[in-house]
Length: 624
Ligand code: ADP
Ligand code: MG
Image (tube, rainbow, N blue to C red; front, side, top):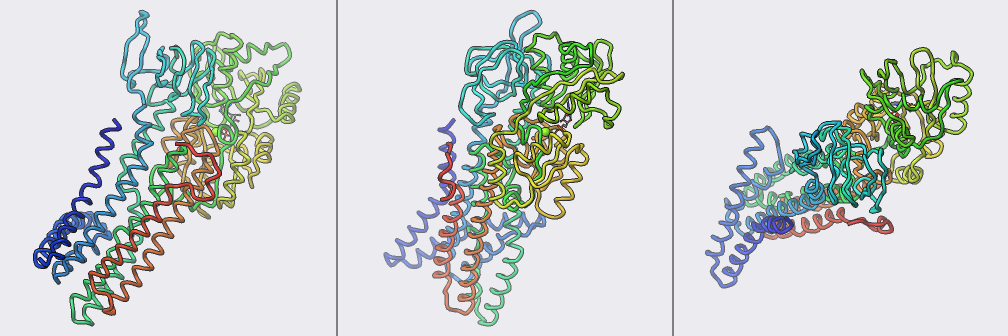
């Protein structure tokens, strides 16, 4: 529906175009000598703009919000009262210009989100028990259902492949390269089938799938119409009283209402205050183009001010796609049996290590048993009943001294090699340990450096993993501090402590990170691969599985904030100067209105720079 969208965009400019035409008709009349008629036309323009603005202002008062509209309404009303119709008309044009530009910036910001929503699947093809295929609404799909994905279809739910498939995973990886996946591998929803149709066993229902979290955030972000109310109101809180006092004082001293109107007309700051939203909304748009969905302007602004960054390890600094690195078992044990038991329990866990174990077991052709009574202890592991045995899979109990010799040796070996360990225990002691290699993301060290350059002064890794593995990763990526063996509750506590000192960002991927993400000033979720729960509470989501996009987002936020502050600061400074001149009686309303219009245009054009990459960003590859 690009045609309809274009038409809608046209309509956004229609009021401004109409208003300009009428103002120009007035100008033509004036030039032709019909001064009275020209005055009537301009007065009509002023009144036609004043009415809706006044209604909007009263509505704001009703909700006890004190906006900048007050100044605009007073300026328009004042211009009518003292018969400065041309000045009124110019203020009206400014007001409508600002609105149109805001709508334009908003539109740019949400365009990519709407594209994302447009391709979100709404139905799925499900295999019936009798072998037939039915088309069902997405919400009807349950974990365990067999789903068929046709060529070109978007994978509707997270699932496990029942046959080989070729996929376009660019939504997830950010790279447009086709990937071949084998039977038994797990797929996140959202990727596109680039080959023949294939079957999938759903591992989650639609709402619990990866893509759903991203789509919901996109919906929320598009629904949010005025993302910058907070910032604009903050300026208004100081600016409006100042303006009213100056206008009132000047009017009283001069004994002339005209003087007050002159001040109000140059003060009418609507497009000026829109410069801030325009810069921030432009930043949101740029971030979206880089695959980072930011919930609202306030979050982008905070991201641009952040000083401290907390990073989760597994799935955030590491790729979160661990590879098998061997299995060590108790003397007399069978490695495949240990793997089979572990993978059986892990089938129901959303953890990245769980997916790795299940994939490894399938690769070896092991027949998994359906587990019962599975419970997950976030940040530690899972337990459940398999073949009548109560199994614990995950971290070792805290005290390693009671370990048998083979287990201590396996532990040391894993430490030396930097492998992650998943212990399997049936209550009588460890049966074996599965070693996994979860390499650091290749772009992590460079990203950390870019983040530092962007102004983050304190980077801390918080992980539930052991300190040996944690330290190794920390050294590889170059963070300032490491907190290992950190359960979810302590992650929250750490975030809280850091947030008291500086604006704090937390990045994570897991269910167990969700509370910490919610606690941070800005929570950033690894949305492409991470848990749905973390995307739900996050303020920003990286929709592609790349850490460098975090640095992109911070740089974009910083730039947008700088441009916003610069635009607003310069614009306000000039406006205040003009107001003082007007208060001294040296700037008549008409000249003031035109001057302010000029200031506003400059300021808005400056704010729109935030849409672009800036000179420093130009060396980096751009994507459309
Ligand atoms: P991080 O904080 O680095 O992302 P997590 O908190 O997700 O790591 O997990 C911490 C540790 O807990 C993991 O390194 C792993 O040893 C263990 N663990 C958690 N969940 C599981 C699971 N489902 N299976 C195996 N091990 C797990
Ligand atoms: Mg994690």
